[in-house]
Image 1 (spheres, rainbow, N blue to C red):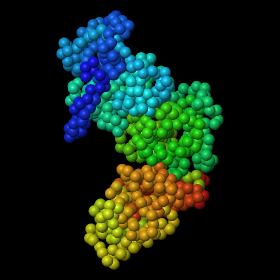
Image 2 (cartoon, one colour):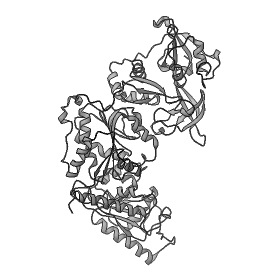
Image 3 (spheres, helix red, strand yellow):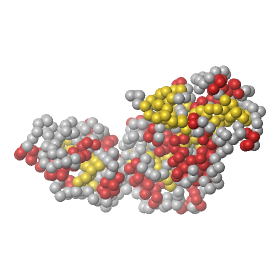
Image 4 (spheres, one colour):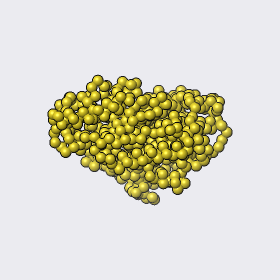
Length: 632
């Protein structure tokens, strides 16, 4: 076997950015076989083929011919569309884009192709001990060739064994090979995420195309292959007899760790009886919207179906997993996120970030999507396609949020999706209403270069306070301004811990440096999205090791803290829209033991977003009072 026939070929120059930055790419190669008697063609991954084994030795019929060299599967898809070919020459013409239906093609000279009567041999790796593990990890999945090695490691087998298993699944009709980026012209598309905006670049095999939308999962191009699980189409609406998972009696699937509140019970009954395919649960922050879905999840599991709980952010998934563990202790569960060691868990109840959902195909009968209005779900279209792709035909998607966007509200009001409102928290106390405190602050426009009156920034640089007009203050003026802010924050801190929100990453260390001299004796820390110590700091925050914690919007969702007060500084910043402000305000007063809390918006002016956030929260309280769900 020659070097370019061993399965992978490297050092292909790929244009992956607008700046035409070159990176190295790899192609997964396939062998094309043709049966002279039947005229039928089929393919095998070249990594599995023993090119030195002749048909006489392999016991295969002499009518079987193998084509050299091996090529990316992209070139073979069109070949396999025809049921049969009368001659080897017609196949060569098809590959080169000539003859019937030819378009594009490989473009090699006819004489450079070589047909040989060959037998083939799969890897000798035994499958009987790994087939079960691989079948559970690949069911309803789509797997790029770049992920096979990781799948092998997670399954405790060799890479060759995984390739052999996937090929056998294809031959038995339970899987299919696809070019990761396939089609032609305007129909060219990434088969993993559905993106049509592709980067074009020259390769050893002609022009290649790479999908950048789902590159976070590992970049794939037209030279890669995608294995996709395939089964007889069964809609999620099929109602079969109840099948209990892992032998657990149906009544024991759900073990509620606490009794639902009146508002939760009402919402839970509506969710469980819903028969449509899309529903919005519009709930107040801290109302317990997740638990409202548990009865519906239990019903799906009792019917032998698969359930996905998805959220855009890792923090939300980390927060929900312990609650799922407590409610469904006997159900096999899998957690998937960018930080999880496992990528191919086979649980019937899956909790995953929306990026990880792109690895599934028609896998779930019920999808619960939490925080559908959160970044990055709102910014990346392929995440929406991934959710739709992961849902079985006829399945149901339940969307949860405290701050729905206009489009889904419009759909709900037009009866295009179901709507359940949950305006009250389980402890029956009203939501804390934010107060605007007009306070002299450094201008957020200059905050990045602003400096503190005393103390140092977290990076150690000496700083001095800047006024909103840009002039540097000192002496009595500086003392008066900082003392006013210090008095305000001391008053809030006397009520409990402070969760201190800032608009930008650079503002975290800036305000830590400013707050240290303003709040002496208090334990002050902070974190942001790319902070390498983020997870440890958040755990320390939950454990009560900080009195003041400065953070960006990464903690506006997916975290519940006891006895916490919320301060939003530069609340009039353009990055803070009304949904963000509502979510940040929702961190206060969530626990039954401390149902009240303070929410303070610090700003020179009251922005429209601040007004809208306050109105939104007051409307929730008004609806809850009207329904008799809160005690004033």
